[in-house]
Length: 200
Length: 200
DNA sequence: TTAGATTATTTAACAGTGTTAAGCAAATGT
DNA sequence: ACATTTGCTTAACACTGTTAAATAATCTAA
Image (cartoon, rainbow over all chains, first blue to last red; front, side):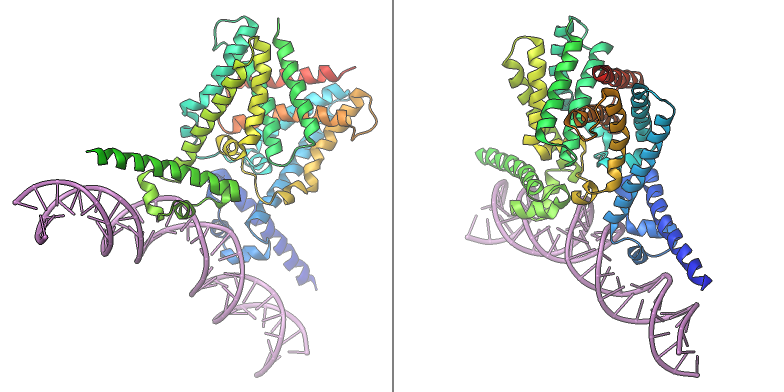
């Protein structure tokens, strides 16, 4: 009778061990290094038994994103509880969101499908990747009447533009978007808003 | 003598064929379906010859992102050339950026490491993924004095917040970010800006 | 034209991946 | 003590990226 409970407890423990093992491997060597056999190694089993706890590898990732959202939700709640005015709450929550992303980098990546694409040095040293910035920075500097193209304020404005547009794009590419009408409205609102804040 | 040129031309053609084949496969079946052998099938060769044109699979992806940035750059230039005032130019360019992303979805994905994570239905039907929205929407509605939590205007504001924060986060997770000081400033500016635009 | 050297291409192989089916061994129920 | 279930492993399949060896085709020179 009671042994049933013990076995049940053990089962839940290995299930949880599988998830922690996966996260541990990813934290050590990145998402690309995650494999069923390596998970099995960590929990000291062979690969096939994992399939008694999860249908497949995807299911493990899905469970990790679920846990990620729960953790994020907890952080948001805690940030919210520190304030009473909605404005303060919003600011605190978005800061908490930001902090969550970097404190739980790997979870955030699987939650929102960010694949630190490859050998980052390569992509980041890609000269062509600088081309968009050149187009935008000249217009921004002209609008703000600032000569130095590399000044911090231009960088800042460019990042603000880029963040909102790239954010909206990537949310939509993950099928997480809302209706196209709302997207268009957010895009236009944000762009014209930033432009207005720049215009002298 | 002249045959050297012909061979050179043929080589450049197969190199280009490899890239188009890769893009074709991705457009048909997604990034996960891309493999060296499938590329070889399309160009009617066997896999090892691809390594005479590219060092490895990563190199193919890198070349595609390079082409992506060049294409994006061209679109931006064309949008810019249609206007003379910097404000109009900026608006046109960001709209062009937006349009590029959806007209060249696969390229944008490899350029910015967006891995339409897995079976999207699953992640999108994840109840926990709605939790953040619930936290934010209540504060937004309270601030805007709107009862209906699902009203379009709240959705819009939430998406604006989310886009800028998620955009900034994912840019930084890809090591594409600027200094932390600028990040913080962009984040605070954007958040307080949106909050101010909401506050009655 | 024929022999030798280069080049182009393929076949075979290695180590790894996710996943499934068959086998074995230990614990359990009767 | 026997039968049955359970837990776990081994073996296998069909893939993946990548490399080395073997073969086929082409060009060069006598």
